[in-house]
Image (cartoon, rainbow, N blue to C red; front, side, top):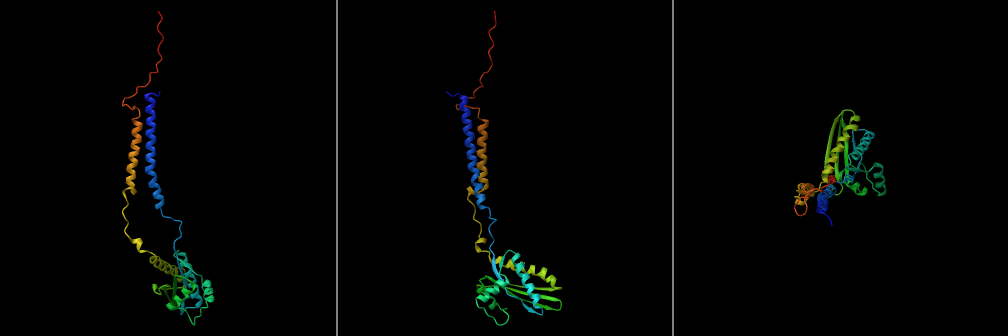
Length: 246
């Protein structure tokens, strides 16, 4: 038969184990929910497919216009907002589609037609001009689906074309990227956030965790009591002395 002291120890162990299980059941769900709610950083960001028509030269050598067009393609790609079709690929697709255009393709209607043939979402068209030492860059971001000009960018730069190539084209690309990113924001993203139920709030689980921890502590501190509420005295381990000799 088990003594009262043994029964009390067993009950203390059971109480501690139950408190630990309760604490684990309280803390594990919010941890799992936090993992599910964490943003997925590995997913690829949606990009807008775009192609650039050769800029129309106005008082600028064609070789310089071609260099600026290529630099704009590179800077647009570096923004991470666009999938840019290369010049050679665009010309190849247009040739396969039998596209023919007399003169320069620099109108919005021509840009939309080219965009439909090569299968992109946006087209960029414009011109590069120079008056004296001042260069002027005019660009239009055109929606192939609607034919509407979504953004128009104009840059004036007084100086050498080297600076225009290395600095101004990067700034122009960032402006166009910001405009394209703004078009991708859905109305649902601006809806007010709904309040969370009480069982999904952190302080709710913190309170339950505190109660569970308090139960474990109470079991440890009050574990010396038996089931009948009386304290079991420790066993007497004193060795009796032998009787005195007469």
